[in-house]
Length: 127
Ligand SMILES: [Zn+2]
Image 1 (cartoon, rainbow, N blue to C red):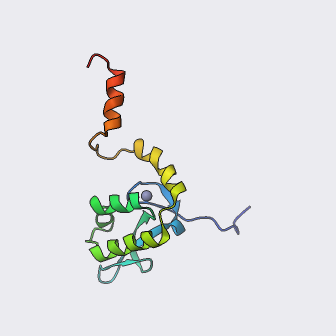
Image 2: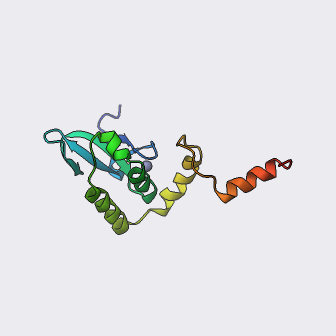
Image 3: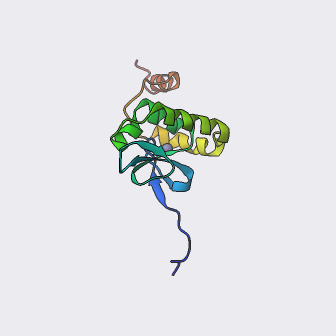
């Protein structure tokens, strides 16, 4: 039995929907009392986002944290996370890991990149 072994607590990122050890995620909390949104600590409904620019951008653009917490998230908090990211840096390894996931994601379709269009033409010479 391994009950005494510390096991990672997995939480889902609101942007990429991947499960991660929550120590590697930023946590936003809607305070149970007044409904204000805080970072890192507090009691209440929580939302998590990866510590990487791709997920942070996605969360901001698509208001994923707002939706997860069901309250408006102040820009100041998102700005603070951007600032933290610039201090901590974007881990290059995790960015690489992220790419294939993004390709197979079920997000709303975006404008195809030039590369995608080129590949389509190659597969369909009749066009
Ligand atoms: Zn993520």
